[in-house]
Each structure stands twice: as C-alpha cells, then as structure tokens.
Length: 309
Image 1 (spheres, rainbow, N blue to C red):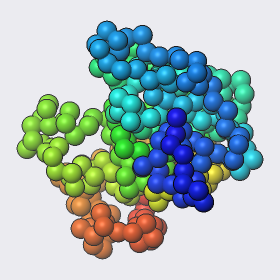
Image 2: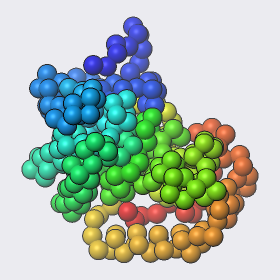
Image 3: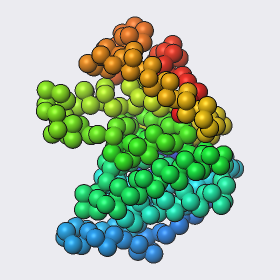
Image 4: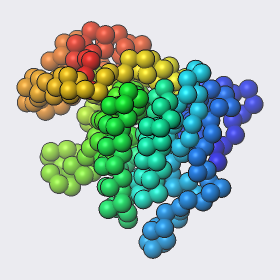
C-alpha cells in the first residue's frame, strides 16, 4: 500500500521519482476515480519466485485499473520499480496484456503506461519475453483501432530491456530528467562489449546516453516533464490530444527519421557531440539545465520535433 501523505500535502506536488506506483496513479487521476483491477486482496502472485526462495508481492509489481483524467476515461498500468526492479514475469505481464486487450473493447480516451522497469525477470525469462511480445502486439492493435497509448517514464528503474521496446511502440512518450530509456542497460553493454565501449560506473555517461534530456533532444521522447505528478499529468493530457495516426504513412515517416538520425549522428562517440551537431550552444551545460532552460533549448532543436512514431 502507498504510504500516507502528510496533512496538507498536495498529491500532485509529489516527486514522480520518489513516489510509489500507487501514489503516482492516485495523484495522476481525477480524485477518487481510480478503480484497481486485481488488487492486492486478490493475491495474484508469481508461482515461480518461491522456487528461488525469493519474496513475492500481492500485486506482482504492477497496478492496473481504470480512472478518469480531466474527465476523460482512461486505463492505467503502473509498474512498481521497488519490487524486483519492476521486472516482467508471468503475472506481471499478464496483467498489462489483459489491460491492453480490455481497452480494445472499452475504447477509453487513452491507455497510460507508467513505466518503471529494468526489463524481464531472469527467473521467469520465457514468460517475461512472451509478455513483452504480446504487449507490443496489443499496443499496435490498439493504436490501429484509434486508441492512443501514452508512456510516462520517470521512475527509479527507467524503461529498460523489454520495457524499452514496449515504450518504443507507444503513441507518445513523456520523460523526466530521472527517466531513462534503453533496450540494453549499462551493465549489459559493459559485460558484452567491455568498459572501453561503455563504462557502467560512469553515471554521468549513463544519463547523457540514456537519460530523459538526451531522449527528448533526439526526438525519442515527445515531452519533457519536471519531476512532479502534476507535470506528468499535464504532459499526458497534452500528448493524448496530439497522438499520431498509426498507419503506413506514420511508419514510413518514422523509418525515414531513424535513418536520417543514423546518417547524421552515427559517428558520434558521446551525446555531447550529438548535441553540438544539433546546434546546442553549450552542450556541456545540458545536464545541469533547469527544466525551463532545457525547454528553451529543445524549442531550438529541429530533431526534437517530429510527427512520426
């Protein structure tokens, strides 16, 4: 259960990074409108973790349900990064997939996915990988049916591994400075390619490469939010209103954009080189920029604005 807030605390002033999954959902939605599907009282827990002497959670690390956002009906899934890094297992994945499939029948104004995941649980790897594929297929079907899927990324675990793949299929993404998006995590890259290729202990390098500011500047995310629930709520409402069509023209435009990105930046060795090539006046200053200053920088960068996804 979410920790109670101090008296007089505005829930939407909460730090998104510090909040639990349930705190994020409760503060994001219109007050009193969130109804959870398969809550902890149902005790839908992983059947596999006891085999490894690992603790289980009654919700398996994901909260799913329906709510309203500024009066609009939405379905919401929020991962809990504090439980096994928000990793996908059999039950965790099934809850997300069930929510996405239900959206095809319910046709909400949008589905919101609050990412906070390191990817797939090694203890449930086959089930987790299958869940990733099925979630991506379900999102594609939803988008083709005209239901936008909005990803919000600002939690402790980021959106790594299969979570990064799912994020890439969303209609639109909002990310904060604390959010990170990548298919391969820093340690995975270092293990396979060596520290000379990517030093996972260099936290500044990790954030320059995978962090929210970089993803926003290159157009990998569509909005940059301050680290508050209120900022993510405003971003979600804005992105719902400008979600792109999911058709051949969108896919071809996205492919062309990715090809152009590789052609222009493929020889760069660090994000600061990419930012300089984009025309950012002082690339080294980007990591320390305030949200307001960063928004001004984004407004001057052509790559940050596009109509494809």
